[in-house]
Length: 228
Image (cartoon, rainbow, N blue to C red; front, side):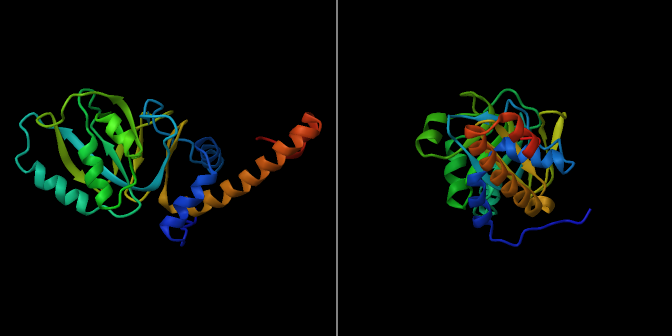
């Protein structure tokens, strides 16, 4: 398969996703032979109306009961590598106990251009995150502090995030993350341009079909457009 890589500025690409929704993007990916890119449905927005779109800044976290003495400097170094408009996406090694994300993470991340976070684990400080309009998608909310329980192992390396129809989805640095009310999808970066092109065509088709459903015969509309 020939890779199709879009050459548009990333800010422009992110803006294009304003007209899309995850159901549409998933249908396009499945049609292209990539049906396993949806993340676990348990990874959801912490508040209604949140959306997120941008290239993945991947973070791998691990159990750390000894509390890494270099954790503070590691965090600072990691955030400094972020660039606008990245999405912080975290593999927490299936942690089910603590908040792997919170307000201070968002504050530092936004300083360096991060536009949102997707966490295969827990988050806290939710009201602060909501008030500042910083989109976070996570598996659960908890007040439990991460310090002394979980730490950073690596970043900008391939990670495994729990999937919707597979046990995990591999997310590589730079893969495009898109989340809305229905969930989160990871789009492999090498096919992003083709996905956008097909999504735009699908949006146009759906808009035409909606107009025709209002005034025409439903069976004729279905026969004309096929799967919608």
